[in-house]
Amino acid sequence: MKAFSLVELAIVLVLLGLIVGGILVGQNLIHASTLRSVSTDIQKYQTAISGFREQFAALPGDFGSAQRYWGVGASCPSNTTGGTCNGNNDGIVYCSPDYTGCEYTYSAQHLGLAGLIAGSYNPNWPAADPLPMKTYAFPLKLDRASLTYGYHPVDPATQFDNFVAGHYIYVSALATTGYYSGYRDPVIACVDAWNIDTKMDDGKPGTGNMTSIRTSCTTDTTGANFATSAYAVGTNGTTMLHILTN
Image (cartoon, rainbow, N blue to C red):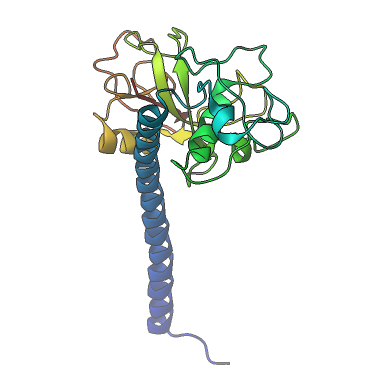
């Protein structure tokens, strides 16, 4: 059997290098496209929330007349099938740890029923559901990430010192630990969070309308130096993003 010559081996190695390089470039292009889609979806969600407020003079999730428009849910506040549930119309999209249902979980459903976002949403969260984002949150192309909306109080344990209480869109992962504690988990790689923040805001985790939680993704984990904190793009941690809407 004739062996490969050095020239032939070199050609094979060059071809393999081109193939591997092409695959890596393709993966990078796909990921860049995914991050662009996240930014686009955030903007669409912001527009949908504003449109809902203009149309119904209420916030999605907190809307006290939702059943009048879209029918009565079969088992409020859980709303396992059909229709929807009313919010308490107090101007705050919020829930408490002991509440079986949660206005957070109704925000996407109300937006969907109003035709302002695509998809059909059920705020029910079965305890054994491994992917609750499929029931009530707006899914993103970024792995495990989704959009939720609601009120966030000041949380000194995770937020920067200048963080203000208000309504936010969350870019986060959903877990299965419970309504209150499990639907906002860090999921975005540090460099991806920086990328999204740079495209949509000021590129800093502690300032602007888009902020991050204090994690290994930020150069300041104490919260005090929010003005000079930066994304630690070289680390392998994850974070979540908050976009202030009011």
